[in-house]
Structures are given as structure tokens and as C-alpha cells.
Amino acid sequence: NKGKYEHYMQKEIHEQPESLTTTMRGRLLLGGTSKAKGVLLGGLKDHLKKIRRSRRIVFIGCGTSYNAALAARSLVEELSGIPVTMEIASDLVDRQGPIYREDTVVFVSQSGETADTLQALDYALENDALCVGITNTVGSAIARRTHCGVHINAGCEIGVASTKAYTSQIVVMVMLALAIGDDTISSKVRREAIIDGLFDLPSKAKEVLKLDQEMEDLAQLLIAEQSLLVFGRGYNYATALEGALKVKEVALMHSEGILAGEMKHGPLALVDETLPIVVIATRDTCFSKQQSVIQQLHARKGRLIVMCTEGDAESVCAGGSCRVIEVPQVEDCLQPVINVIPLQLLAYHLTVLRGYNVDQPRNLAKSVTTQ
Ligand code: UD1
Ligand code: M6R
Image 1 (spheres, rainbow, N blue to C red):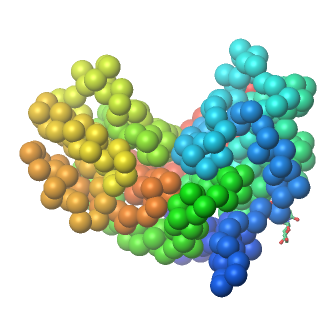
Image 2: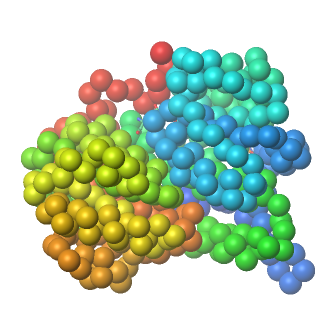
């Protein structure tokens, strides 16, 4: 039931304040006078000791689910001190990469039925790793075959393009990082800031959804373009990949997410006055580096659309002209949840304006059950 919406993708984008709330329901501990703030992931509580002892955490997924894991990678490393490696499921299987019994392998999949991810799961099970599932579908193959896991509880997602599942997956992996990270005095302030940030996240998502009209106007400007680049780094490299995936998947426009740190190693050659480029430059430790990326793109007369923190519009575009998308600021590791929403809206409006099928893009299936 699409309710007041025309398409499922549109409904699922706008539903994110609620889906984020249900993902966190019962899992965040507010703390009180004598109790610490914390998280409770029922599906993991008996396995946390073993996870904390692992030598490595391996995140495995395909498409959007891979991107969600990438968004959470550095926080898991920061809070747990355990190295995290990333694997695209098919690539791990293709090269039969090393997986050890001391590894915790986390399988991220909205449907829980993706064939490539399932094959990687069989492979990790054969190699005796601890296998953890993060899925939206209770009773799915991944939920059944993993040793333990977390349901993201985002509600049924119907649009082929994953939207609300992506943001809920990130939130679950942030909670995973909090659950396996040591509750040390030195990390207390950081952990509490993240938990407070999680509490506030649904209302910030609601705020950023107000950009809907602005994103439709931007889509109108970009309607006839051949290509759109998206530059991000740090926590928002994943946002660049995910924004580009949405644009290519539904709007059928070439789009590429690029790690801004790699710009000078090739992509800069593409920059001219015509190619539209989104630069994600919200406030975090990478901000000054992104400012210098913007300057370099300005110097080459790049056609820029800069996503920045509210209040930064003027300073961020000094030195050239650009269009700005201003988003509310949240804790750095949660910023990808907020930043992806305008890009989801942009992909949605581009698709509608270009006259393509939003919920069923050509050649794609919601759940890819063949290899
Ligand atoms: C569970 C209940 C929830 C109830 C809550 C009350 C289910 C599905 N969930 O939620 O309805 O409100 O207790 O405390 O009954 N699992 C995997 N692999 C996966 C995902 C999950 O093995 O990919 C396992 C978990 O380890 C766990 C079980 O499935 O044993 C349920 O996981 P989850 O729904 O996340 O647990 P709770 O949040 O505790
Ligand atoms: O169900 P899964 O999360 O395992 O699906 C993985 C990919 O097939 C999926 O995310 C795909 O990239 C989406 N259509 C992206 O919107």
C-alpha cells in the first residue's frame, strides 16, 4: 500500500524517520543516574565475547548493503580496535580469499536471500569463521544460516532501489560498534555522543526530507545530463558510492562515486564546465581536505553541487559559483544516514522526470537470487 505516495521508493524514502525509530526500538539504553547509556542487541549478546576476541572483522555484502557496511567500517574499527576488511561477496568467492576461524564475518543483506552473499556465507562457514547476519527479513536464508545476528526491522521494502534499509543497516552497524567496543573511560564521551545522536536521528531525518522540493528542482536541471560524479571521503565515501548507485540504478544515468582523495590520480581529467559534480563536504575531520578539493574543482571551472552543513553555504563556495545542498549536522559517524537522503530524493525525482520506472528499473530484481 503506497498510501499518499505515487511510488514505493518515494514512500520508503519519506518513511525513514519511522523506519529508523523501529530499528532502534528497545535497543538503546538511555542511561540514568546510576546506569550507563548503552545498546542492547538481543541477537548478539551471547556472542559478544567471541566477537571481541576475533582477530579481524570482515564485512560482506553486495550493492547497497556493501555500501552500508562501508559507511560503518571506521567506527567499528575505532570503537573495537579490531581491523575491519571489506568484501564484495562475489569477489571473495571468485578469488577464494582467506577467511580464518579467528574471524568474525558479518553478512549484510536487506533480503537475506542474495545468492552471491549466501555463497560467501557457505564459504565462511566451511572455514569455521563466526558468521553474523544483518538482515531485514526474519526467516530468510541468511538469518537462518548465520550463527547469530541482528534484524534491522526497517519494515518491508518494495522498491527495487534500497533506501530505508540502507539507513537502518548503517544504524544497526553503529549499534554493533557500540556493542563490541569496550566501555572504557576514554571512550565514554564519544560513545554517549553517538547514543544521543542516535536518539535524535529520526528527527534530523525528518528535517532533511524537507529538501524534497529543492531536490526536484535540482533534478530538473540535471534531467538531460549524461553523467553525474559524486565525490566523498571518510564516512561519506560510502555516501558517494550509494548516491551514485541510486542515480544509475533508477534514473538510468551514468553516475560514479569517487573517493575524493583519488581525484588527482585520474578523475580530475574529466572536470570541465559541463559535467555536474556533487561534492560532499559536511563538517567532520575531512572537511578542510574537502574544502581544498572544492577549490581545485573551482580552478578548473567545475560545475559543482556542494553538500555542506547548515550555515556553511557561503564559506564553502567562496572562490567560485556552485549550487548548495545544506543538511543538518549530526555526529560524524551518523552523518552518512542524513547525507544520503537528498541523494535518494535526487535519484527519485530524476527518474520520474526522465519518465522511467521508479520501482522496477529495467533488468533488475529486488532480490538477486541467481549468480
Ligand atoms: C527479538 C525478537 C523480537 C522481540 C525482542 C524482544 C524475533 C525475530 N525478534 O528481537 O520480536 O521484540 O526479541 O526482546 O523474534 N539472527 C541471526 N541471523 C540474522 C539475524 C538474526 O542468527 O541475520 C538471530 C539472532 O541472533 C537472534 C534472533 O535471530 O537469536 C532474533 O534476532 P533479532 O530480531 O535481531 O533479536 P532481538 O532484537 O532480540
Ligand atoms: O538484499 P540485499 O541487500 O542482499 O541486496 C543486495 C543488492 O542486490 C542490492 O542492495 C542492490 O544493489 C539494490 N537494488 C540497490 O538499491
